[in-house]
Amino acid sequence: MKFYADVHGTKKNSERFRITYSTDGITFKHIDRLGEIPAGPGDRLFMDTLPPQHTDGAIELLRKGVGVYYLRRITLIEKMRREYKLPKSARGDIKTLMNIEERWFRRVT
Image (cartoon, rainbow, N blue to C red; front, side, top):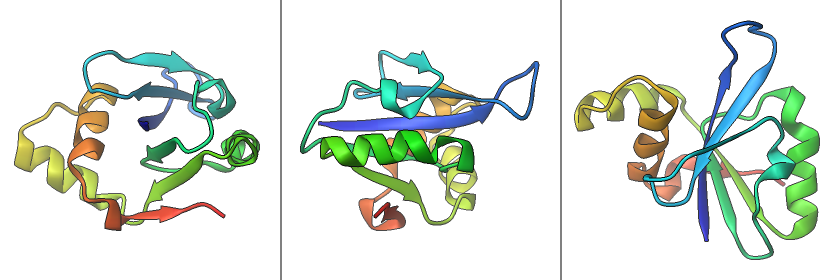
């Protein structure tokens, strides 16, 4: 199963990050740690960026057998968002990630 996640700073404290994820672009869930994503072996997680604060969560997912990928060029989100006329929000960014080809993502090892 493919998971798509948007990592964004919180409104109250820009040093903290909130993660919004979806598998289908219709239902969205919010979490504070990457390890809370219900992914299992063989699943893949595509995200816009991997902040240093969330590397432990990424390692936890890798140990579970989940493939973790982040976007090589973050500027692609803005370009694709304009192309698909999606709003600048966590949900819009996730839908944009779903439309970006997998070759633009780099695997975390």
